[in-house]
Image (tube, rainbow, N blue to C red; front, side, top):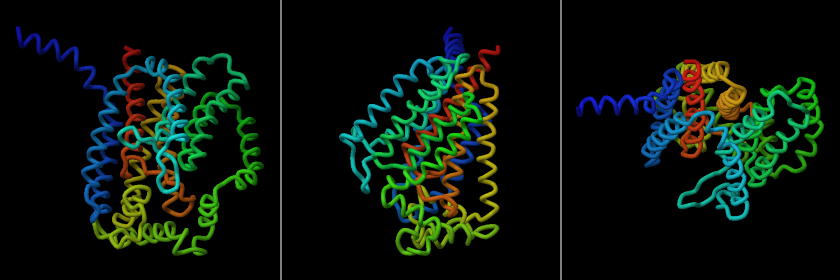
Length: 370
């Protein structure tokens, strides 16, 4: 009787433990393995980093498992409350936030949290719900309202100031707007309007943000100041050669020439130690990650899940593209982590949340078809 009860219990509980999508989970685990290998080298002399990251990984997988068990229908129901809470927390940051390194980005609730990170997921969730609720009768007013919903949190994030996160939230929201059927004529018009507005944008940028753009154009104008990050990271990337200098043998990292070597610039450490061959392997992993996400989006059962899966996938792409471009000296330094590679708690939990959403969409697609 007891054996029968245990088997019956397992049958009831089994669906909750088989929610992980095999290909997506494997790709993420490979990226995290590469991350731990690189972080071990980058954090030599910095105690506690490896232990903290292992903890962050377990928390990320727990969040991924929880979210994967939530149905897309439930996600639709919590989209508006999640957006409202996210905006409320951003307002709290503006009023009571903790200031670090001259920026007010964190909220202390026993621990420091960065609400802007979660808006990268909440924003596409909200916009996907909005377009799903209006599917079949989308008008230009619909896109205008969506743009306003996007502008509110972006304005609060820019105010912190955190231009890098603001750009990522814009990218996440714009992906949903574009995938919802934004006309090419409107897209071209937005590009032209954006180009025309560049002088205005330039005038409202903070001094350090303007310096980052000017440093990108010619980092040698201030090689020991504003240009130091880009110069040292590009030296590390280039010095890796074809096969790299070998694990834990990167001179730029261990002589502390690479700033933020465990977080935003971990790609420079990886490139120096594993070279072009290692970079190609890493890029293949990211292509597989993006490809799997697009496959899940293409097979999603309805408009809401297609928009959401497509946006989550493009978030992964934007993270990787911006970080690698930043470290390689072809984009300004904006403080964007390399997905599933950089050290950090909030960013990794956000990425795990996105992975859980993709797995939920894939899992419930199968349930709907059967």
